[in-house]
Amino acid sequence: MSWLEIEIRTTAEAKEAVTNILYEADVQGIVIEDPNDILNQDSDKNDWDYIDMSFVENYYEGVLIKGYFEKDEFIDDKIQTIKEKVHMLPTYDLNIGSGEIFTSEVEDKDWNSEWKKYFKPVKIGNSIIIKPTWEEYSDKKDDIIINIDPGLAFGTGTHETTSMCIEEIEKHIKNSDIVLDIGTGTGILAIAAAKLGAQNVIGIDVDENCVRTAKENVKHNQENAKVKIIKGNLLDSISEEADVVIANIIADIIIDITNYIGNYLKKDGIFISSGILVDKLEEVENSLLNNEFDILHTAQKGEWACITAKKR
Image (tube, rainbow, N blue to C red; front, top):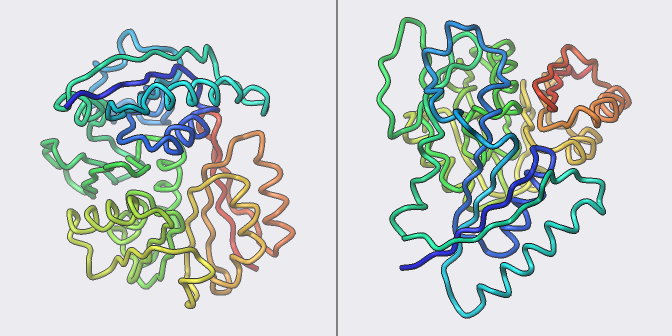
């Protein structure tokens, strides 16, 4: 089967918007090449033993987003619509970088595994090792291994938003905790909470692909007894109170859920929120303070921020 690859050269700021445009066009697969997901991590130099750095040589100084479409009679119209929508993004005050767009034909066997060369074992925090399911890894003393196959879902652990969440989970999870992971994606944060000792973890997502991928990753990590993945939204699907709530989404949604997330947290419960662009940080902090949270810690990596807050 012949496929068409569309490559869009853009920025981290526009990554989510460009990806959404591709999903709206019914893309069959997406590869995001962003070496800064690795380079911007605040890693101890000793941790670089975990990372294959060969892929960052001669990389494009921005983000490459590649979408893959089956060639059919509608493909030309799809590509033209994608180009028009991408080039409209600056009117919404999004910096898209060069915004260059290229297309090429690829064989079926090539694209489905192309992105895997960019995902290598990586250490996050003090003990968490994120390992692709297809990679070999010799674990060291005190390593906690999380096996991940992201499929079409978001969350390999290398992105700043995910790595900051893992670092905060590592600080705050206790053995008896009930944890709620909103927008679970690949399930990586839910699995991390379980491996760090949480008693019961619920990962929730509205996207069927994410739910399917997260369930598979829970199996890969043998955490079925602790982690339950469900499809739905928070208001309709959850009734119990948690000790820790995690939301690695986007700032606008976090601002919205701060109005009611306290209803899902026990007194003195911890709310870890990420996916926040730095220029939205103050707005999110104010929303938390106005909804009876105390801010315990704010972390920043690159242009992203993560907030850990406690319910009063």
